[in-house]
Amino acid sequence: MVQPPRLRHRPGSWSGGGRHSHRRYAQGHSHGVKLGGGPAVKVRDAGMLSDPRVVRWMSDTAETAKIPYQLEVLEGGTTDARPIQLTRAGVPVGCLSIPCRYIHSPSEMVDYSDVQNSVRLLVALLSNPIHLK
Image (cartoon, rainbow, N blue to C red; front, side, top):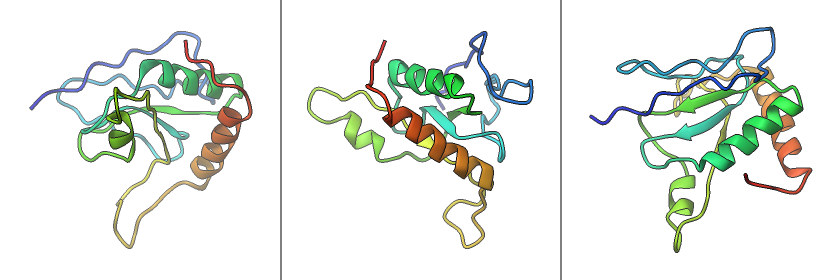
């Protein structure tokens, strides 16, 4: 099994409550996101790898708007970003997720503050011109 890359904390990031929500990925351990930790900015999943410029844009926007967020590495499953990424010569993609437990089941759970902060981050992302750097 191919292991996801190690995530490193970017100094100066804001994630609320004085604690950084970027948790380092330790090889051999699941890098799940926690409920109540803010929206998840996907770094990669089983089917796609987010463009680092898109991840940086999303993270920087969250920090500027003081919205807590988490970086996500998902070992199984994928999103609609995969076919978008593979279109023509390739399209830069990223993914904003709402952390969830018991996904695709009748007892699926989310934290309401994660939903609210996901909407806030999406509005902040789309309120200004997009400059990938």
